[in-house]
Length: 96
Image (tube, rainbow, N blue to C red; front, side, top):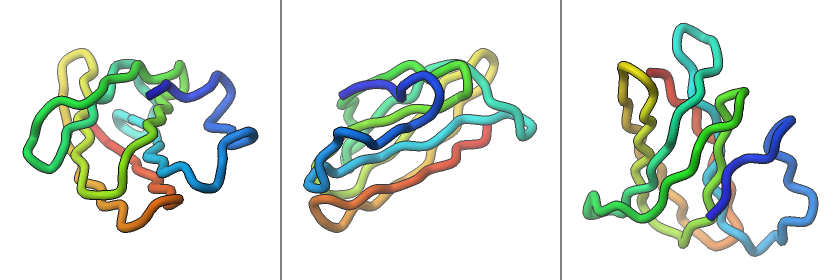
C-alpha cells in the first residue's frame, strides 16, 4: 500500500491490472491532512496511509467491499467502496 504522490494521484507506471482505491479528504470543501484507514468487509484493519498536503490518498486492494475511515484532527468519517473486478479504480471523496 502507498500514499498518494505529491502533486496529485498520478497513475503513470501503474499497471491496468491493479485494483485502486484513491481520493481525497476535505473539511468544508478544503483539503485536510490526516490519515485514511482501509477496513475489510468485516471491519478489520487492513492498512493506513497519510493523506498528502492536498488531502489525497491511494490504496491498492483486492476486489471486494472495503470501508475507508478518514482520521483528521477533531473528526472521523467512513465511506464504503465496492470494487467488483480486478483492474477497477474507485475515486472516493470523503468529507469530514
